[in-house]
Every structure is written in structure tokens, then in C-alpha cells.
Length: 248
Image (cartoon, rainbow, N blue to C red; front, top):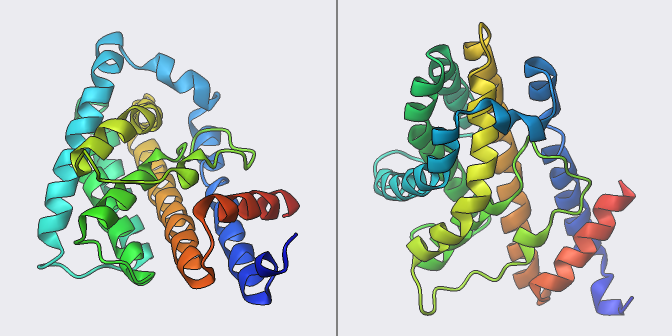
């Protein structure tokens, strides 16, 4: 490997990012144990009309979250990760308590909390969430597989994506991300509708989702900062990260 790709500082940065990636990939196991079954079977629990409207509902939730999160930044300061997780967990319990109708109603609110958390992490890494290109990068974090999806460390395609606003808008980025996120949120909704334990499952899924997307935001913006610091392209860093994850 070339010398410029093996400096101690870069090795340390990649190692820390890899640990976060691996941590994110394990947060959904407890949820699956709680609700029973496999992640790929969860979607079968949703009524067909809900599954058919899920992508549209996800697009609306993302647009709502983008507007609400952006407006709130000047009023409410960024919160600690544990506060974001606690707030989302409480909302998940409330959403799951009433079954599918309340879980659907809770979706845009939880998505807003998640996006605000992601924006706060972007700021932590020195990026301005008020800039359209960084808003797009924040939305891109939602293109990750989701905490209930099986992940052997190979799902890094979203990290390689080069977000660009040329010829489109942040809302165009939302349209590209929504299909991937709708699959992840469909699993969340299905878990929340488990009879009897709906509130518990709702709290557990929101805990997992908030933890997961916050860790993935650290991975995403950690790589962006490393790219700037070491003057390396994103694809090169993603390849280094994949190797580091495999070695853990």
C-alpha cells in the first residue's frame, strides 16, 4: 500500500471509524430477539396498503424532518447523543402502545429527532448543517441499511456515494434515499405492532434506530473529515474502512 495511505494518523482515524461502524451493525440484535423472527420477515406483518404507501410516507417524513430540523436549529441547541436516544425511545414507546396507527403518526417526529441528531454530529465534525450540501450529506446517512438488516460489514455503498446538488436539490436527494429508508422504517413499524409488547417493542426499536443512525453519522462525517485532513478521495477511504472492519 502506498506510503501516503499508511500514516499513523490515518490508520488511527480509520480504526476509530471502523469501531463505530461495527458497533452500529450490532444494535438491532436485541430488537429481533424481543419481537421474534428475522428482519426479512418483519415486513410481512404489515398490511398491504401500508406497504404500498410506505415509500410515499417516508418521503413525506423526510421532507417534514428537513424543514422542522432546519427551523429548530436556531432555537434548540444540539443535544447529547444520549438525550436524543432517550427522546426517541420515549416516542417509540408511545407510538407502539397504540399499534400501527400511532406508530405511523410517530414516524415523522422520530425522523426529525434522528435528522437533528445527524445534523448535530455533522457540526461536531466541523461541517455546517445549514449549508445545502451538508444538509444533503445528512440525508444521505439515511441510505444506510438500518439496524435490523443483516450486515457483514459489506454494506458501504452509501458511504461511497458522492452527494451533489448540481441539477437537483436536497429534496432530490430525499427522493433517492427514500426507497432505502422506507425498507428500514417498514421493519421498525412492523416491530412496533407486535401484539401485547407494542410499547416495549416501540421503545426498543427507536433506541436501536437512534443509536444506529447516530453511529452511522459518526462514520459518514468521520470519513469526510479524514478525507479533508489527509487529502484522500472518499472511495479510497471507504476501501480502507472495509478492510479495517473485516479485521475487527
